[in-house]
Length: 249
Image 1 (tube, rainbow, N blue to C red):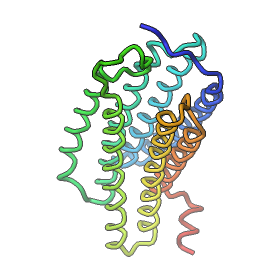
Image 2: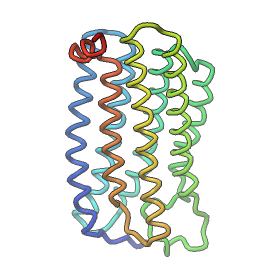
Image 3: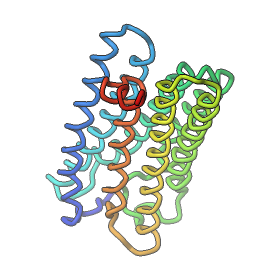
């Protein structure tokens, strides 16, 4: 089996990922501290979401690091992609559980989401995805990578849209200004994640139709939206004093 050579134009994203890891670890530590202070489930679920997304980013960076060191996208890179996608699916589930706890909505949807999430994770690890394998190595063979990737995006979009709708409905039912602000922040976090995946779709379009090597400027923008997700979800739950004072004014 052959390997796809590493393109040096991709190198900046590797260092960009390292910076993102530092930021995500920092936000995860803050959320874990908040959970240890409050000893309730909401910050626990968000801590798990942050941990899973941070580990997914670390896994992607390790896979890319192998390519940087060896000059080729090899075995570690190939396993890093489905592993990271799988962690995102699990993070989506815990995010839904968190939103369900906050809004008291969507209880009947949880079991189907878990079942479909498990199925997608299993599909991601099937050999016919050909993660990181040069196209010439599987010409004429079954290739489900496009469908697997789309299933992850569609699944995530369903979760985020559900949560966004829950936030808007719950906001209309409450008169508490602080609660309303928290729900709007959580809503903005979902919009950020929708934009996050949209940027990766645009990157894929460039690869498919413009012969682009990948990791375009859309990937950089995508992770900016991921940063916004961390910030918005943290603020939606923690509500620091300066934010509360601003809301009350």
